[in-house]
Length: 366
Image 1 (cartoon, rainbow, N blue to C red):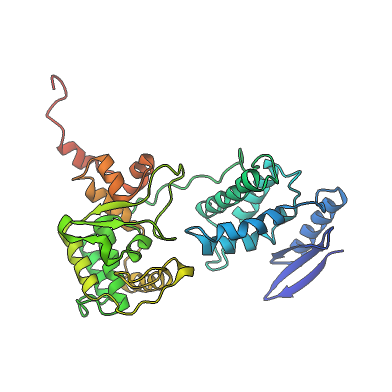
Image 2: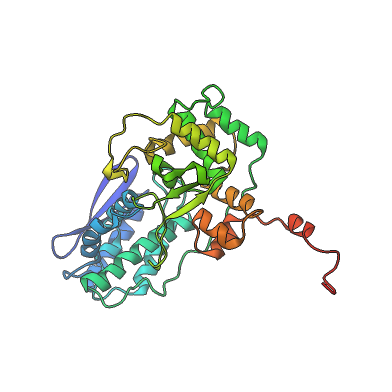
């Protein structure tokens, strides 16, 4: 029989399963918890929950692999959460695409623990990609399963690109003011350095992780480039095919050079290695880890009053402005986006009016 725990106005149902394990889920009311528990008891009676190797066994084994990737910290959280989901007790011998579709449906109806809002389709999509990677690992490496049940599942409805308008000069000034860059032009404070990172990202299209992992030796001022070495976790996005190196030279505008000069001149002198955070080989030009950068950026953004703005919007901003001067292949290499469709649909702001100015009076006889 199921048991129930009540905490903070919610009800947690606990169902014991064969093999000594348990299945848990939390609901707003006891009635919802009881309905869920009855369904799990039915599944036990019909043999849908078995004592053989389960999805949970695969997830636990894959955990050490998942936490070594760029998103390792979040991957660890996701896998631990899944161990409380009904899918964790499905037998690897019987799991099907239908089980994955049920998991997608459950996740899509859940709320974020931080925002209390329903999970977005893009969040469920990211989790599905991780789950699929775990099953692929189980197929190819552990040989615990013959096919990946995520193949052919009904994926969440695609979310259209954000499509935020380019920042105005007034908005850029609000960001600089909120970061305290006018009072601290030499970038001595962490907040001012984060503001400088944001402006550098706007000029180059580099990701936050790439900027935070720049070393003095990567900056070749005379050539007007900075080298993204892509050697450390968090400093790049890997190629799916594995055949294209993520390392690249990033061309620099005069403004980008000025920002890098200021960051280099005020680089923190004492920096300790942080291997767990993907910062194992200091010194770094910025001298800050990802968590500090993220927390300070959110404070800057909220203080500035600029709405609907993420740090990663800088990539969209840079791609659109750089497209006026670089051809599509040079642009793809400069900002590190190998998928030209992604470059076209997400990172480039369509400007038909600008395109119209480039056209001849007529296309006839041209």
